[in-house]
Amino acid sequence: MKTLCDIYRSAREEEMYLYVDKREGTRRVPEKLLELFGELKHLVTLVLTPERKLARAEAARVLSEIRERGYYLQMPPAADSEMSAVAAQNSKLQR
Image 1 (cartoon, rainbow, N blue to C red):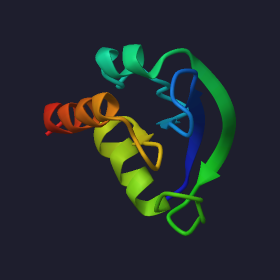
Image 2 (spheres, helix red, strand yellow):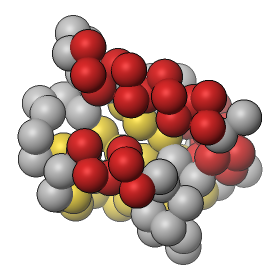
Image 3 (tube, rainbow, N blue to C red):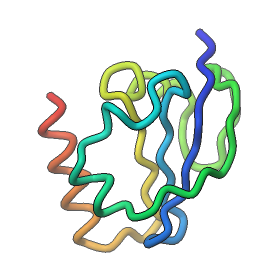
């Protein structure tokens, strides 16, 4: 399945990215996450397929989370504890 995705980078955290379905935008992203993410800086729009190679994420997982949650949050390799806690909390809220 193909999905047209918008990818945003965080203005606050280096190497933190938010993937969303272009048609839905950020409307399903929890408000608290958007607050902590900071200003959304549009990076790119791309067609994402399960086979597509991504630098630090598995495309099939990204697509699955976008379908289920409305977004995929790619954390920096050495994420700080506050953002890791928020990611864990958001994961629990979406279940």
